[in-house]
Image 1 (cartoon, helix red, strand yellow):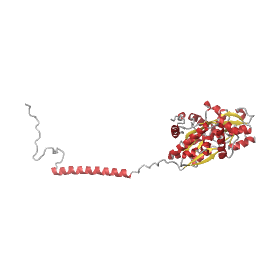
Image 2 (cartoon, rainbow, N blue to C red; image 1 turned 135 degrees about the vertical axis):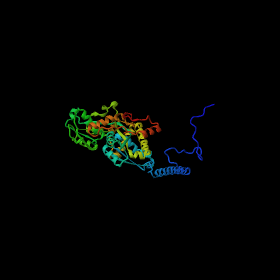
Image 3 (cartoon, rainbow, N blue to C red; image 1 turned 90 degrees about the horizontal axis):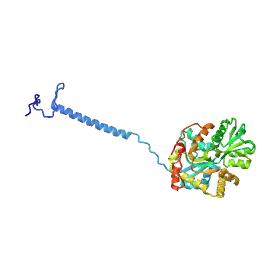
Image 4 (cartoon, helix red, strand yellow; image 1 turned 120 degrees about the horizontal axis):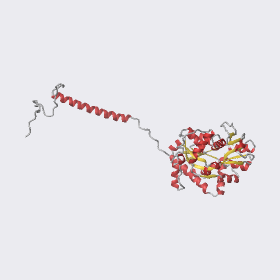
Length: 395
């Protein structure tokens, strides 16, 4: 039998129910009903505060600005395409003249504009006068660098090769170029950069204002031919068919074939680029353009030589205003490979050449390529392996 506790439980006061809050020393005693009323009021106040917070939260969410709706991507009503009237831009010449690009675009209207050099085409692209263009890689790089990656994307390659430094027969070495006058298509154009960078490696200083050890005069290609024939130029670094024209029609000789300056002789001379804002708004139109481009390159690589020469010459006459002798066409085509691969591994050198030439600045060009749509087209048509931008660290 257990012993009784030495601390008996306190006696319950008369009228106090079990569970009622006990008043201890230091608290003022309050009647039971008043205390209950206070508790009820406190609970009600808590409920009101909670409800008010919920209402405020709802109102706040209702009054918050809704995220701006992103416009749905749609095919463009019109695609404005630029290209040059030369053999390096044959995918454009074929795609336009044979209706391959227009057919791929479907209901989107195709408008075209012909340029003579890359910087002018870039200016038109950035101004919205055109949406996409075939162009040399250096103007594309320069635009990308200046805009901090916001202006253009390279979406495909078009041509590799087809650029030479041709000079008067008496010039036999780089040393002979001191004090001479040379031409390029335009300041900052791909051949302009190539010439300035090469001369620098030979120990010749050049400046963008035309001064230096060798004077470089940016000149339209047609004028270059005439000036060379008149003895007012000593040479020029040119794309095709202009290099072949100076050789076959004006007696020039090849001092430098640019293929000899690149690993495996592979260097890009023409790419297809697009305005980034246009591409974001009209991805289906860009993909349709690429479909026509891929078909054009395929046609060039499959057509018999005679047919290719005839069709290209007709397209050149339409775009550039004059047909070419068959030997000029044939020589030009032997120097060029048409490819949808932009040869991404060559762009670090291209950028450095631009820096050395004084036409661009050092920069990170990762992000220059967007080859997703091209690879989608290649996958659908089973036309060949996918291409990549791994040379720049991109997938």
